[in-house]
Every structure is written in structure tokens, then in C-alpha cells.
Length: 127
Image (cartoon, rainbow, N blue to C red; front, side):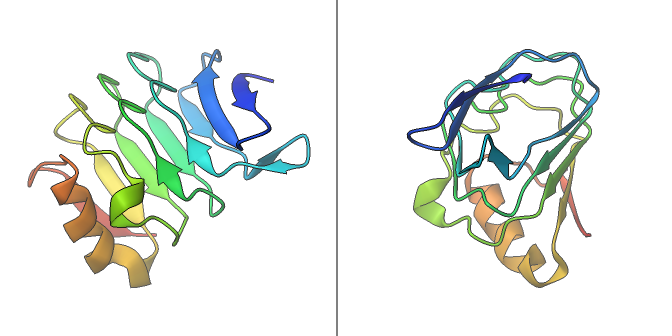
């Protein structure tokens, strides 16, 4: 498994793969993935696209910080709420990152994620 995973909390704590497209699984070893943990993908220069599954409820500090080559973040979860996304989760990511979200979440997530540090340059598109 390329993901470092804390099965007692359902938290991805790191990633050791070299793939350009990362599909985070909704469960690992039968345990639901609920949290993208602090620093989980920080400073990863290889990832171009990341897919966040429908099981995720929380994204912690610096989860995707400084992922300079990231071009697309696909968010399949409808469970993200204001207090569950760190304002530092997307620190120093590429200004051209496109955020793809479920159509019915587009407006809410656009407002929410801009509050969490994504810039006006980041485009929000429906899946």
C-alpha cells in the first residue's frame, strides 16, 4: 500500500507512491478513509491530480501544501464542512489548480474553499 494509514482514526498520514494521478481509496483494509491528515501529501512534486473519495469528512493542516505540480483536485465527498477543513490545507499550491466537485456542491464548496485559502484564480468545475 502506498498510503500511510492510521486505521484507528481512518486517517491518511502520508503517501509514498510516485503516481501522477492519485485516487485516494474510500477504504483501506476494510476501514473507511475519513481524514486526509496533516502533511499527508505536503511537498509532493509528482502528483498532478488527486481524487478525494466520498468517505472523507476532514482535511487537516498542510495536507496538500506546496504540491507545486498539482493541476486538478477532484472532490467526490459531500461531507466537508467549514470546521473540518484546515485554512492551511492548500497552502502554497499552484494558482492554476482546477477544483472539480459534484455539481450540487459547486457553489457551497467554492465559497468554503476560497475561505480556506484557494485563490480567485482557482477554477471550480462540476464533475
